[in-house]
Amino acid sequence: MIRCRPEQHVKRRRSERGYVLLFVTVALAVIAIVATRFALRIDALRQQALDLQQHAEARLLTDDAKALALYWLSTRPIGFASAGFADEKPLVMDGRLYRNAEGVFVSVQDERGLLSVNEPDREALTAALLNAGASLDMATAAIDVLQDYTDADSLRRVNGAEAPDYAALGLAPPRNDWIFSVDELARMPVWQGQPAVREQLLPHLGVRRDKLFNPNTAPLPLLKALWPKASAQQWELFDTLRRRAPFGDAAAATAATGIAFTQDNLLFHASNAVRLRLWAPGLPQSLEYNLLLMPSGTAAPWLIHELRQSRRLTPPTDVPNAAASASASPVEPFPIPSQAVAGPRQASQPAP
Image (cartoon, rainbow, N blue to C red; front, top):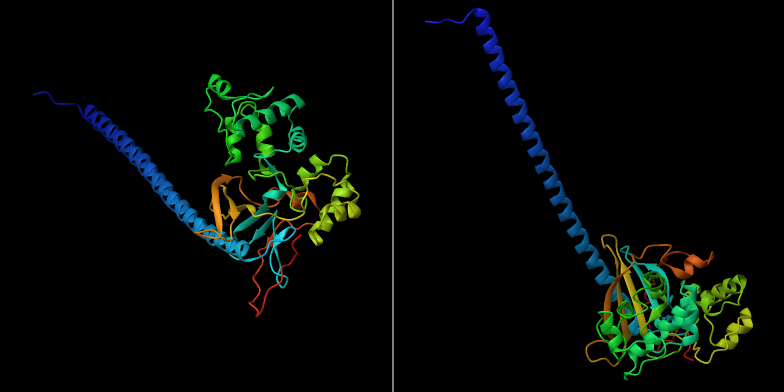
């Protein structure tokens, strides 16, 4: 019988203890990694649940704010630049930023203060395109393409595009009818290849079906592009005066500022075509409703013809007039309805 020497027995026991220690260390490391990954997964699920809850609460708040804005717009007379009665602070429709008591940001833009893509004013749209960074050739071609997209015939303008041109580019054919959304510009030749120009121009475009234009509610950068000869001081004066009391007609605006408002399509009165934007903390983007106010509507006194998501509505960069005017407040409280009074109510601004 062979017996181990004492020193060999000690070495073997030490070697065994080394293996056990290594195994325990590896096991503890694996357990720690699994526990860490499990904890991270639990944290991610918890954060996801919190985000979903915040999103649901934000949507509920924006729905309430939308209902309040729609009620206001459908129950108040519309004047030169706002909706409201004479005994209450009006809701101004120039895209300025409001915040209600629940913290929801609200912006109401009269589409008559924007350029129409359905009835484009060629001179005005060319000026806006050039201001957005387009070349003159690109602007000319873009407008031809736009008009070919909406007209009912298949005759191609000089720089335009019809169905064969769309097919050659792998695009869906033109609508040959009214445009429902300004996002349709991304489906058109020329426009499709100019994302930076589209991004800058889209906030100044609407889908109204007429060429009438209201400087009272137009964004100041758009006005500067359409009347480039007016000085910065004149525009600052114009913005200050229209915020104090909107102009009733072109003659009054020209007399007060010296800016030549001589175009035939000017109408210093807000329309029933409205762009309503809402955003609450918890939403990744603003909710944008393009709607028509229709007092005789069968289902409601308004018709929402588009819901789209747009840039997050936060001060001050998303407030065109406030960002351009030192006297303007970036955010205003949403107006509070006055108490009902007996007898007929007067509009805050007379109809033209």
